[in-house]
Image (cartoon, rainbow, N blue to C red; front, top):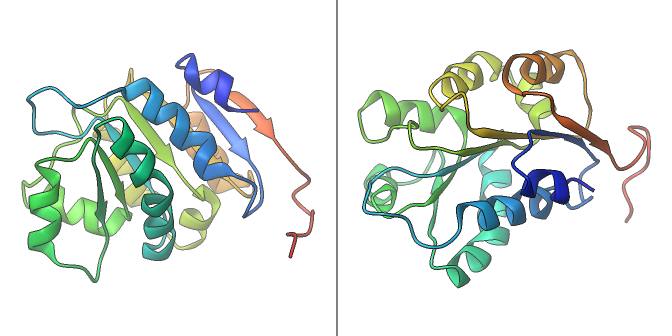
Length: 186
C-alpha cells in the first residue's frame, strides 16, 4: 500500500506490525528512486535508521542482494562491530543502514556526512522512542536535506512517533495495514 506513494517521492507514514513486510515497503522504493551506482562522491544517498543492531542487520540482509543487482552498495553501521571496517565501507556505500548511536559517533569523528541523503527511512520508530533515541534521531534527521524524502515506519503511531512525523514529514501519505492490536502470525 505504501510503495506507489513512495515511488512518487511522497513522504510516507506507515504502520504495520512486525512481520508485515515493512522492510520491502520502504526498501524497494528507496532502491528504485536512488537507481544504479552513485556518482563519484563519497557520501551515501540513502539512510535507514533502526533502533537495534539486530534489526539493522536484518534490513541489510534483506536489501543487500537487491541493491547489488542495481550495482549499489549498502553499509551496516552498528555498535559492537569494527570501526575500521565500517569506515572503509562508507567510502563505497550508496545506502547506510545504522543504529543512531554509532552513526552519530562516526559523524562526530568526521567520517560521514548526511548532506547527500535524498531518502531517509526510520524503521520501528516507536521502538526508537521507547529506547530513548528520539533526541539523537532528531539531531541526525536535522543533518539530512529538508527537501529529501522521508519514510517513517512503525508498529504503533504513538506520541513519540507523532512528534517525528509532525516535525519531519511533509504532507505524508499514511497507510495502516492492520489493527495495532492484531496478533502476529506464528
